[in-house]
Amino acid sequence: MKKRIIAFGAVLCMLLSVLFRFMYPSPFAATWDDVDFALALDKYDLSAMQPHFPGYPFFILGGMVVHLFVVNPAEALAIFNTCMLVSAVIPMYALARRRMEWNAALLATAVLQTGSYLSILAAQPMSEGMAIAVLWWYLWSLETAFRKECLRYQILPLMFFALLMGVRLSYAPFGFGLLLLWLHDWKRQKVRVLPLIGLAALLQCIWAGALVWNVGSVDGLLKLAFGFIGGHFTEWGGAVTETSEPVWSRLYRLVFENIIWTGLFAHSIALAGVFLFLFAVFVLQWKNVRFAMRQDRLFLILTAVYFLWNLFAQNIDKPRHSYPIVLLLLFMVISIMLQRKQLMLPLFLFASAQTGIGALLIQEQAAVPPATYQLAGYIAEQSSEAIVYTWEETRVMEYLRVPYEHKRFYQYAYFLQDKKYHPNDTIYVTNHLLAGFRGQGVKMDGHLEKVKVFRSNPLFDPVYSEIVLYRWIEK
Image (cartoon, rainbow, N blue to C red; front, side, top):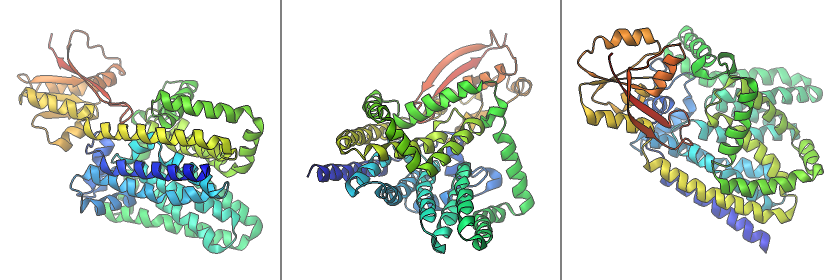
C-alpha cells in the first residue's frame, strides 16, 4: 500500500511540474542566444544569425508551430520545450523499468522530471529543453539496440541521434555510443555495420540539407560553420584553448558549481541537505558503487566522454551545458538507491522539494525582468541623447527596439574613435565592455562614473545576471 501511495505521489509531482512549466514560460529573450532563437520564429535566416549556426532546425520548426498559437516567440519556444520534455517520460520510465519494479520506476522518472534546474531550462527559449528530451529517447533506443539484434532496433538510435544533432550539435559526443554499438554489432553481424554507418550519415543530411537550402549553397554553409567553430574555440566560446584559467580551476567549477550546486541543487540548501544524506547512505556501501559501474557501463562511458568535452571544449560559465551530466549521474545513482525499498520515501521527498522549488523559480523567471531588460529600460527613461557601448547586451537592445543608439565594440581603439562622433551625447558603458577592454591592458581610471547596478537571478543567466552601468567622463 505504501509503495502505491508513493507511486501516486510521484505522478502528482510530475503533473504539477509540467503544469507550472506551461503556466510560467519565460516571456524574455534575455541573452544573445535567446534573441537569435526568438527572431528565427518570424524569419529563419542563418546568415543573419536567426538563429546562429548550426541553425537548430528541428527546434525552430517546433517553435514555429507553437508560435501559430502563442504570440510571444520566447514563450512559444519555452512551451515547445515543455511539450518535448513531457514526451521524455516514456524513455525515462522504460529505462528505469528495466532496472526496478514499476512503482520504483515511476519514482525514478519523477526525480528526473521534476528537477528544479530542469524547470528553469524548460521555461526558457533555448534548445536545451528539447535536446534533453531527445537525448533520453536516444539513450533508450541505444540501450535497446544493445539488447536486441533486430534491424529496426539498430536503426532507431541513428534516427534519434540525427534528430538530436538537429536540435543541439554540442551533444555530438553522445554519438560515441553509436561507435560502441557498431563495434558490438561487428562481432554479431559484420555485414550490416557498413550500411548502418551509411544510413547514419544520410540521416544527418536531413537537417544539414535544410541549412544548405536556407543559406543557398554548400560553400556558404561551410563558411558559416568554420566561422562558428573557430569562434567556439576563442574567448567568446569559453573553451580551455583560449583561457588562462588552470584546468584544476575549471574542473572545480564544472563539478561543484555547475553539476552539483546549480544542476542538481539549483542553489537550494534544502535540496542539498536531503540529497547529500541519501548519497552518503549510498556511497557508504561500496557494493552499491561497484554494482552501479557494472549495470550502467554504457551510461558511465557516455557520461565520461561528455564530461571531458564539457571540461575542455565548452563554456564553463554556462551551467546549462553541464546538465546532461547531472541527469545521467542522477539516473545511475537513484537506480541503485531504489534497489533498497527503504529509500523510496526520502527520494519521494526529494522529488517533492524539487517540484516546489522549481515552481517558485520559474514564477520568478517569468515575472522579474532580467538584468539586460532592466538596463535597456533604464537608459530609455533617461534621455534620447544618449549612446551606450556594450559587449553582448546590444543584441537584446536590438530585439527590444530601444529609442537610443547602442553599439558593440571589442577593441578599445575603435571605441575611442567612435565616441568622437558623439561630442554632445551622454556616453554610457557597461562593466562587461570594460572587462573586455581591461583584458587588453587598457586603464580607464578617472573616466568612469558609476550610475546604476542591475541584477537578476544568476540561475537564469549566470553571465549577464549583474550589469553595472557607467557614465563616461572626458578628462
